[in-house]
Length: 367
Ligand code: 8OZ
Image (cartoon, rainbow, N blue to C red):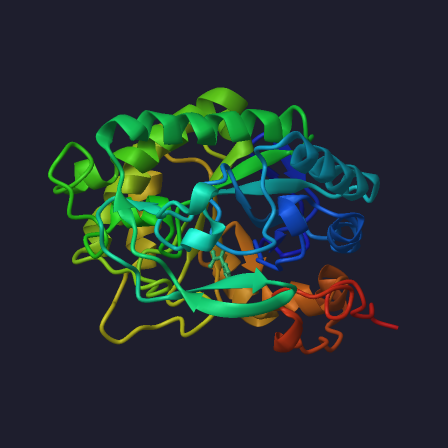
């Protein structure tokens, strides 16, 4: 039986093990530019089979929180190059997560104080993190404006462009498209945020159109074997919901099957919270079966609240990779600790978002 510690071929890469570091927003990149401390943070965690970077804005419009990194300016790309270099020196592998937040933003974070964009002009009842005069705090997201249909090709282009520069200029091993957690692509997918009447709204085929255009563009640019996607069928994160997520996501994975993706990354349940949501049931086995039956060969990556025992069970039941979030924040040597059944450091929530070295690069390895 496969173990978490066995290597696995994933798309174009051979991973050392099946333990993945989940994408984790840490708000430590002033001006969107990755710092030397970020390079140290990721390099400390290079024991993961694959590192997925924190969400990284593909454009200034795609940015929704203070001090998250970007991938659209040359200084940002140079900053990332130092991160990937440090990870590769430690024999790690790293994908960048390509992120457009859509309506989960604030006028203070948008170019020229413009309103954030969304499929429909419906505000998300959620908050974003803004640093003003050096002080960080949460603020309600701003009322968005509806994207014009003729702006949509530009967004697809920005994903493609970011993907190209990620693997060429910044030397990432691949890219993960962020289609989860109520951000732009998830907003288009789900009825709670998408009330459009054009080709991008209404039936499932229309609501999935933007994500599929983005995936075809990105995989066409860097290769399916260097492309992954993250989805969260039922998460309530950022005030998102859909009236029939099972049909929606089975359609999505069937359409993704021919792209030869490296992986499909599925957040099960509420992101960072309960794995079961009473009023939002979902059959994840049926989802994977829909993908496999359509010929999808990518690795099946699962995430949300796993520990070692649950992760081994998931592999036994057909998952290929397991992503760990908070455990990787607090345990730079998580793979080694799991291998030895060593105790884990508890994460300090107060240092998750923003700040400096404390709670970032100072968690100790196991003695
Ligand atoms: C926590 C805080 C800010 C952003 C996500 C990118 O949920 C995020 C995020 C998480 O995917």
